[in-house]
Amino acid sequence: MRTEQTLWKEDTGWSAIHPESINGQANLVFAFGGIDVIKKDQVFSELQKRYPKAHVVLASTAGEIHGNMVFDDSISVTACQFEHTPIRIHKLSVKDYPNSFSCGEAIREELASEDLNHILIFSDGISVNGDELVRGVNQNLPEGVIVTGGLAADAGRFTRTYVGADSPPEPDQIVAIGFYGTSLKVNHGSQGGWDVFGPVRKVTKSEANVLYELDGESALEIYKRYLGARASELPGSALLFPLCILGENSNSQLVRTILSIDENEGSMKFAGNIPNGANVQFMMANFDRLVDGAAQAAEMSIADNQPDLVMMISCVGRKIVLDQRVEEEVESVCSVFDNRPAFTGFYSNGEISPLMNTVGCSLHNQTMTITTYQEG
Image (cartoon, rainbow, N blue to C red; front, side, top):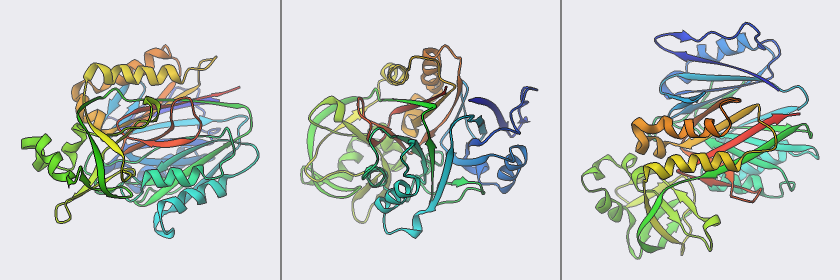
C-alpha cells in the first residue's frame, strides 16, 4: 500500500506533491473538507482529473486532520494505492429508504462477500440516526468484519452535511467502502476522556434518538440549568455536557451529544438512540484526559507492524472544548506511531467503531476513534 497527501487552503492553493507521485496508480482517494469548500463542484473535478483511476470519496467536516495538524476550511486529500486489496464502493441516498436501519441493511447486503474484510462508512451527520445505521450494518454481518467510520459534520452548525463518492458531495448521502481479501490488516481503537459528574438520572421519556424527560423532568430544561448563560447557544453549547449512557460495566458506556432541539416539544435530538429506562449521567471536559484518551485509542490500535495509514475521526465536541489545544490530541496519536505513517481524518458529528475488545460496531460521540491500515 502506498499513499500520498496534499492539502488545499484558500491562501496557498494545493500543496506540492513529492515527485514520486502515485496519482496514476491510486485507486482510492479520501477528501475531507470544510463545509463551505468541499461542496464546490470544481473540488471533485480537480481530484478526478488528478486521480483518474481512483474512487474519490468526500465528506464535510468540523475540522480536517492532515498529518499532525488540524485545519479549518481546508481540503485534506489522501490518495491510496491498494496493491492486493479489492475495493467496492456503495453510495445511497437516505431519502430512498424508510429509515436509517434499512440504510445499514442495504450496505451490508450490497457489500457482503465471503472475503469481506472491512467496511468503512461515511454518513450524512444530520438526517441519519447513527445507532440505527450501525445496527442495520451489524445485522447478520459475517463474523470478524470490522466496521468503522464517521458522520459528516458542518463546523458545529448542525444544519446540513455533505458526503459523496465519484461525484460532488450532497446532503442525505451515505458512502460505504468494502475492502476484501486477507492482505489488508485493519485495527481499531476508541477512547473518550470525559469525566462523569452529578447524579445518575433515569430516562423516563424518549423515542429512538429523541429525548424528552429525565427523572420525569424536561431534559431540555435540565440542560439549560447546567449551561446557564450559554443556554441561548443551544444546541452547540450542549457539546460541553455530553450525556453518558451507563452500561453494566465501563466497556459498554456510550456517550451521546445533541444534534438539535425543539423548544415547542421540549425535546432534544441526539446522534444516537437514548433508550427508555436507561441510566445516564452528564459529563464534562478534562483537558488532559481528553488528550490522554486520544493516545490510548492509538495504543489500542497498534499492531505488530507499523501501519501504512492512520485514520482519526474525532468528535466536534472535543474540538470545541480543546479549542487552541486541539492539535495536542492529534499529536499524541501521531507520537504513538513515531510519526511514520500517513495520518488523515476529520472532526465529526459521530464516530463509528467497535467497543473495546469487540468486533461489532457502535456509534460513539465525543471520542477519538482510530482505524489503522497495513497491507502486506
